[in-house]
Length: 158
Image (cartoon, rainbow, N blue to C red; front, side, top):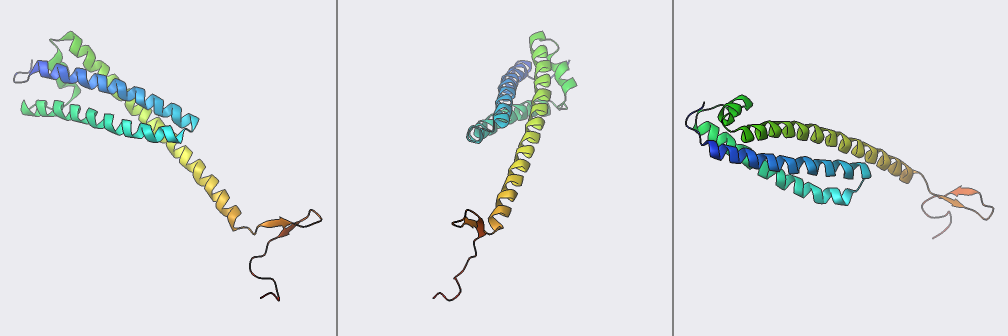
């Protein structure tokens, strides 16, 4: 057992963190679907939600760390298991929280790779467009054949 810690408060923090992580994993799933669909506008809206949810998660994790530090305990999974061992529901929720954190990490990494791929694709498309813009524009003559457009004035014009 670990004396000097408010186990009820810790169990409540674990519950809060679990709910937030569950929401965060769902949001990452939505982000992945939008990335695959290429829905940039919806991604921008989702980015704000993701940031807000991440801040709430961070606050909850920081609060848990502060409680542990106040009791001079290390903020690690094994210490949390010892604290929650008398509360089977909270202990199960803690394990679920660890699993959700692992899932969120994997989803976020995958989404990052999808974003990188999309950015590379966009950069390649932009490079093609910029290269095409540097080529002289072709116009068509009365015979239907393309003729390069030469910029500037015609010889002898004012």
